[in-house]
Length: 584
Image 1 (cartoon, one colour):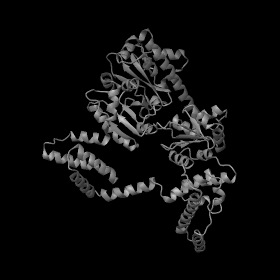
Image 2 (cartoon, one colour):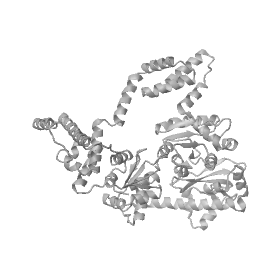
Image 3 (cartoon, helix red, strand yellow):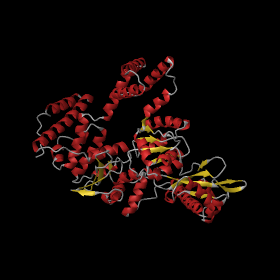
Image 4 (tube, helix red, strand yellow):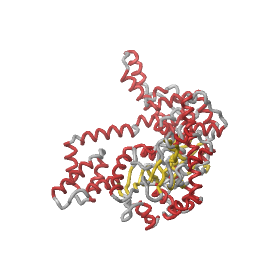
């Protein structure tokens, strides 16, 4: 759904950011700004600020920032449309519906109706568990050590032994056959309709917003498969959802515990580890990793300690790395899984083990080490070569050397010998110089150079200090901001200041669909400026303006083809040092 800029701004302007964020974060007013603990990363000292004048939030600790719309998108994992709908309803603004295609409306309606079916099924399964028919299932859950509160918290339930029990119930509630088929809860065959789940303990699967999107069921007694999940539907994609994430995302821990199954997650939450999640009966995927990346930068793998668990961890580690999540691996030995460990040794012992979790690279090399006989010189040499090859994955020199030192200590290898082997192997592969080139390109892209920082700080000053724009508008135009993002922002800032009103939150709306850009713009409007004396402030301002102008002219001179224009630009360039630029 496309919303005109004017409508987006109306919704944003009528949604006071302090009121909205206060419903999620405890804020305390200090001067003209409100502060609280950041909801996007774990911290003990408040660095999360909400500025009513700008109608923006910014965290000086993790860099999260934006306006009231992006806050709901980040915190609630809403799409832009969902955030707009919530805020519009709250503010009493009516959003247009006519621009949606008939097919889009049909799909949205189908999705809503499937969610309604799932919600009703979840209620029914819980009712059955607590009723006369659910005695055996309830006994099973209690036998696994689950409390009544935990059972209720996760909405656990039971599907009766009768194969059409849920179908008949949902039909009485008015749900049609075609919808029940779409939900995946009922199968339709020549013999008639029958439930997908029967005689199973039921685990509702919820999305990050707590809506039931599917179910998992564990069979009571003998039967295959032991665990059965809902099929993929309009609302359920098992490769893009994680069990327990709806609770874990609000735990605000610095890491997520990644488990293998439902019961591991539930027992971990009951023990106080409310930041545990699990994939849904499938291998960990890039979709899972990208979902996790919204909420954490570190994962601790708490997979089973058996061979299958080790293989699962080895598969998950590179997927997490690719998504930008650092990984550690928890040792549960001598116990098989987190559930057994907690029951045997208690939460405190598990907390200690988590603190000792192994770096994922050293976990991988430990597995590699176990594949060789260190008493055999040939195999020992083969291990050293395999280790050296693995170390070459670190293209940044300092990081590679740090891991070489750690590996040398771990496997009792002379550091200089290992370093020589790594360098020789990298040289043969042409990696040494190539890696350095790659790093330099990355550093140039990621670390703002002097001119980029000058453009950024100048835009910040324009918004912060009313004296700046009148002093620069005759010298600099938006085109002088050579960074594409800053040039676009400058155009909006100049236009707003010329009109006598600048709204940072409104400017940010234009970048809402690009996560990297809106974070950059948010930081632009919330940069913490150094406290300068009046003389220092004048000098810094003058030098910054001249630097931006000089760089702009250099870029234009480099690309100009017209001789007369070239002479004009060179003359302008020569006169920069003589410019009088003052805030007074």
